[in-house]
Length: 298
Image (cartoon, rainbow, N blue to C red; front, side, top):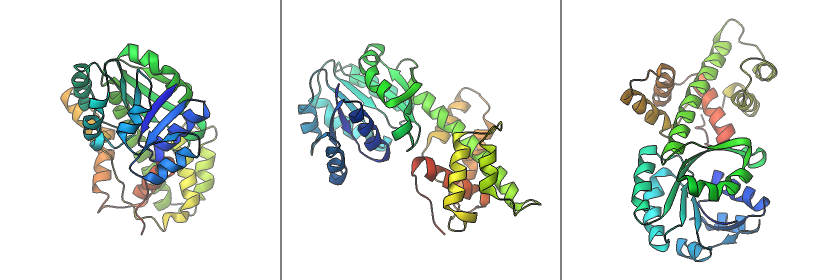
């Protein structure tokens, strides 16, 4: 299939590369010309503008946005006049599901199918495969399913319902991630400041990740982070957040659903600009290991 790809950041570049590996044709653009040149070297058609990108696509045109949620509306405003009835526009970033519902309704008036797809798996998914959660028009999903299938691990994607569903479940996914990461950070803080502070934490997290109940991808990332940042001496301890935790808490309040673990984990992140400890350092490093989010250095 031939698909337009807008946004070649950490995730977008790797996703486009994976599609090229599976022999799909990619027309790509990004504000960073160097990223366009990089993907061209892998076989993509690099273009300088959204207009040129659309012109290089057959109908029905399929365009995948992999950009920050703050930039989605401006990009849609630029691309919509270039699209026609039956074309498909995909938002694969972490947009608020309410915005995705509105965008879908607005685009439906012009005959354009809008799909919201939550993408998970981190940087390692470039090799192992992604996990994707899809919302939007079911007919459009059937069209783009081969693209999604080739990017994902076996059984690692699903269609979850009408517009907004994909971004909704991805929002909850990230909120769960907040809580799981906070629990690991708190546990490692207790190890570091408990009665046995000289425990080899690299060995411990490796042991935990082989056969224990708490083995997980996040524990693997903790182990890698401990190796890359011995004793966390170079790590400040500030944990950034991208919004999904707060959105989930807002939804929980709306539907009267208790989420104490998620709420506490968000509070810790928001306070981490001042209240730092070994646990917040662990969480910050974990985020950098799986997502390349960067860490504040001491």
